[in-house]
Image 1 (tube, protein in one colour):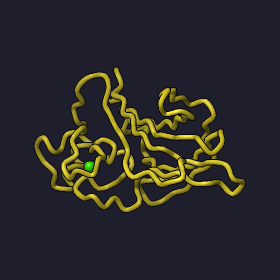
Image 2 (cartoon, rainbow, N blue to C red):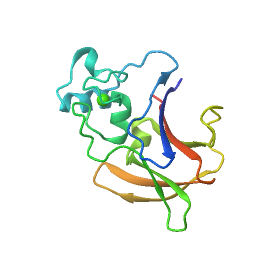
Image 3 (cartoon, protein in one colour):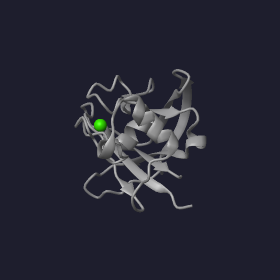
Length: 163
Ligand SMILES: [Ca+2]
C-alpha cells in the first residue's frame, strides 16, 4: 500500500526558537482514516476544514501534522505539543518531538532529518539518532533525538501516514 508522506520541517537550532513547521502530503490525495476522522470530530472541525491538509485555525500547522503530534487543530494554542530543539547537557544538539504510543497501529512513521545548509536542502537521516523517550500521558511519549554537527545544524520531523 502506498504511503502518504508528510514533511514537517523546523529549524532545530539557529539561535532562536522556531515558530512554525512546514508540512506537505505526497503521493496523491489523502482520504482521512477512521482514527483521524474520529480525532478531528473531537474538536468539532468539519467539512473541508477537517481534511488532513487543512489548517482551519491558521496556525501554519496542518491537521495531519497536529494529529501526529497531538496539538489542537482548532486553536492556535498548541500547548507545547510542537517539536523543539535544545542543547544537550554536553553541548550537543537535540531535537524533541511528541510521538503517539500507538503510532504503528495508526500507520504513523516519524523520522528526524538534519541539514547543515538550508539553501542546499540536503535533508537526510545521516547524523541523527533516537537517544531516549519518556511517557507523557496515555497517548503520547516525548522522543529525544541527537543531531550531529556544530552550531549550524537544522532538524525537522518527517511524518508518513502509511494507511
Ligand atoms: Ca492548524
